[in-house]
Image (cartoon, rainbow, N blue to C red):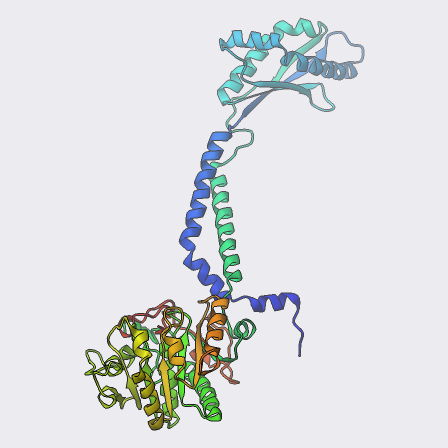
Length: 493
């Protein structure tokens, strides 16, 4: 077996879909942070940076009386530049320039230097505006003649190049460029922050993580089934119920449900178990849809199955199986309160080949109802008439109903939503189920997302071509009129 390098092993730990999804979900915050940084940069640059403008004049320096013309002129230029440097920064020159320009202060910097290897000297003046720089150098050129005697009587300066009004700043700081840079840096840092938080979030994001993080056996994983299976479904607003009995159900989705159901039925036969409890830690993890598909798949194996909606507060199975507008004559809650008999409550779904005990009411005292002897008697009687009883219980984090129902079941399993619940909460729920009468057999990872084109297998089979890809309309769809609790388009509850 090929050993993975450090980088390959690290990349395998990354769930690219969750990383990209978290960035997309927080794109508004990222843009706001970037815009705020750009605005702050704009204010700071405008308030704290002032452009400077420079202009220069070039002089030819010669000596009046010299036997060695070239050597003497070079020396003269060098001596003149040194002397002028002292004069240009003297209070005397500043005072005369201020008087000449009739200004209160000398708002400029002046310097002189010799062009290397020549008898040329440049005078440079820098100020805050082009006009100030030009007027100052002109004043210095007028004033300097009166100070020539202070420098040398034997030197002659002739203007070679007149100064010009500066047309651009010396080192322009573009406000637009700085704000653009601040925007990009802030956007990059915000994105990196969300990527880091997404990577560090301790949830289950794949089958490998389920095996590594959870103190339980893995029963398999179900990949995301899109709410719309075709473009026409999207325009007709015909959302899928995500049932394996749907004629448009994807092959991979059906096969994965079949594989998991086969594993569960094998465990049940081995242990002589009939009653299977399905629960989750929180809502929106897909346990109701999984319960329905487990019952449907077991029924396809020529088994008699009773599916019970044990959620007395937020029933969902009635929305999956009842036809639009169809009402129940009596529901499970009525029977558990002694208001109806079991024969009147069981709903025989001939289309799907299973029997159902459904609810269409909300019972605030649900824990008391499922704890009654009617529920215990129901499971006892049903186990004599059916090969399998699948109980869809409420989430464990909401109420104690799941633990109560687990005391009546033979087996229990936990549906874990992809990247939904922190790992410690899942392991706590596993421990609670292990303390119940029902034997806990493992976890099913539900609604797993991958990037389009990502390879995955179905119990030893390879990918299934276009059936393993997602529809462009699959992301973040809700269950609509068929569910009401769906969060990721899986009909979850």
